[in-house]
Length: 187
Image (cartoon, rainbow, N blue to C red; front, top):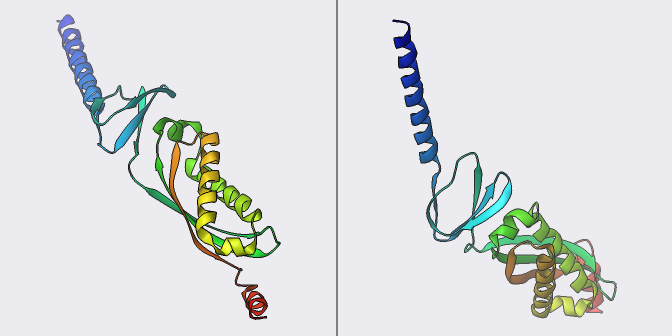
């Protein structure tokens, strides 16, 4: 009679293992939406980029990051800086962008949005620092120049970001010096 309980516990153990394996397999099923791409890391290293559709990955072995590559994202920055003719100017900038390379966006840079912020501020300072106050107040050409330089930086950093539009929302003397600037214009 001593072998029967061992046989039952062996069969029960087999059933438990089979149920656990089945649950593990079912948990690995996931959906990638039409506007998304999945970046798969296997044991922490890049393995594959997954297109839209229903997929399976081995749970706890693969890690899937889904990124929306069609969504237009935006960020706004405000900077106070000097123009080439040494006037102080405050510029408010809006950047619209999309993710063009999900692998670079997810893996090459620790924080792509922060890199975008730093690159935008750098591009803005470079462009504004190289033009006069009159040209800063004419915002269309400045926005185009900033966009070109910003895209160069983002490509250099390998962020996987494509800038779709840069808009200079506001360019004016800072509020602290606005009165003095108005006096100069009146004179």
